[in-house]
Length: 383
Ligand SMILES: *Cc1c(COP(=O)(O)O)cnc(C)c1O
Image 1 (tube, rainbow, N blue to C red):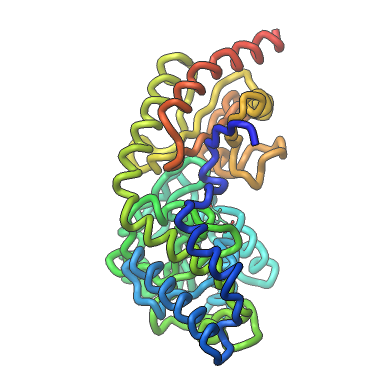
Image 2: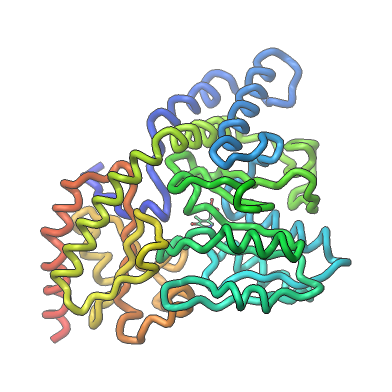
């Protein structure tokens, strides 16, 4: 494979070699079904329970509050549909935001078709919800508040602590899609009054197809999958042992190293951002100035098309994104950029760079070297 400059860490991340090493044994050597009774099955069972502790520790949760799923999408669907079904006699109103990932928006849209009522909170120009609007949206029949922790496109981090307090005060379950936050910033589900939290392995240097749902002790929901007794009846299906072991290791590494990695990644982003701001006078940096993910840089340039930029970047080996990975290729501007009311002239020229722990200063320098030429070329082609 040729040199790749991977600047798309919010789409997915490279698996950490230490994660891969732990997984290998459960793919090559011990392939037992953890539900069987023999010794090697017990060893696989033990590895799952160790991983459960590792995930729980990263969130300050209890191991029995962690349910393994196939990823962020499944965790979100489990909570949203599972609470909707469990509490349908109490009410059919859900509160979420306009800037959720599709893995929250689309289960909500599905529920609307089934007769549920969903409020999509607006956000300001930085991507922040208004806590007063949240309070005013709460009704007698509200059963769930689901709000993204940190936005995958623009990086804005919501005031989760205050949202948790409001949910607690009105006695409504609070779910947060924390796929982009887990492994990047410290999270304490107890302190933040979170009832449900979704996370995904491949966003924190673990494998794809594995994730977890934190579900607070005592909170009942209807399972998405019905089958065997796995995960204490909360998620049926033979466990993805290697994936679970990998996710556990990824969480352990994140707990030990994220503070150190954050400092490094933040510096790289600052260097890139400072360069872009000084070189392109008409640039717009999207997202919140302070409450934002330190790895995410979303910016817009007028009079250029992000798809054209991405194609030229790719020729140099740079991987970046126009909006969220799911909407790449579709010319329609992303729902997040619309929600922050990005002015028309910027909508088409938006690029998301999301850095990770494997990026280096050399790579940033290379980007700085080639990027102005790319923009110059595109503007010349046009005129
Ligand atoms: C990636 C992502 C998801 C989906 O997770 P998968 O594990 O890929 O299903 C959900 N929410 C956010 C915010 C994400 O970034």
